[in-house]
Figure (cartoon, rainbow over the protein chains, first blue to last red):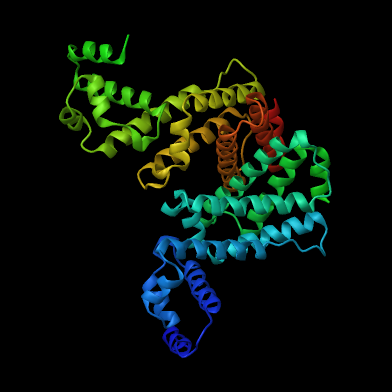
Length: 211
Length: 211
């Protein structure tokens, strides 16, 4: 079915305001899979949804509001994708989540590059959104690891975890540009880097992560 | 001596074109210590140098040319600052260079934040300049480590080193925002992270770095 055809079908559907909002965000997030956030086209999305640009702006007063809603949606999608599979041991769980992270990023490479290194990545509205996702990932990891973390140790650990997320992002971005190693080798590198770092920071944490 | 006084003195000095260029860049780099690259003021610098804005634009056709020359200068300054002290063993040399890195960054925090996370940090002109500095630092580390690196292993090592630089930058930026640990603890974290990573990547490399 062509995209135009889909548009026509949608046109005949009456949606509640919440459904319409979700539809627009979903179309935006789908478009974000292929392009940078600043290249999301309001006109194309309104057309696909079978509504006027004016009606879209009724749901999202500015283009930026719409962009931020799409990024929020994409972030939630990423977090769902990497959600730990608790049927696995800690070490396999970590590897499994990182595999799904790289899978998601590979499917959404243009938006990943755009959100992390594009013009949008330094805007005061977007920075906190992307940062929240990073903090959520750190939170997930520390929650899954059955090691009590001393309050006095937390600041150093937080810095290290933020550093590790930056490690993951930079290694992944560099890998996307020229895949000099296989995807499995990249996953290994990311897993090993966290294990090595955790072990050097706190031997109990390192041991727990290694499972 | 007031900055105005210096300006007056300079005004009377006839400089060769190369000297004038260097003078302007040096004044710009000094200003960059206190502010973001996009806030470098051509007017203030021309005034300090005791020349007209027009003459400054004779040396640097656009404001961007001037900014890039300043960033090149600042990058060279950083690389000189972290140059390895070969009178030390590898492990002390690493720690010593990282200490001087943090020292430099603390003295130039506004420009550090601006070059790594500000609007300028995503411009196509600036990205390669900052990247060159990162690659130069990676080159220095790998040169100082007396371990032959297998060609087949190089891609993985390069990704990991780029990731580690991102780790250093993110941990340092987060630390600058709220110094939750001491400077010495930050230096320890950065040193330990590289040792741990190197050890997990290549035991011989890790052992050589630990000295």
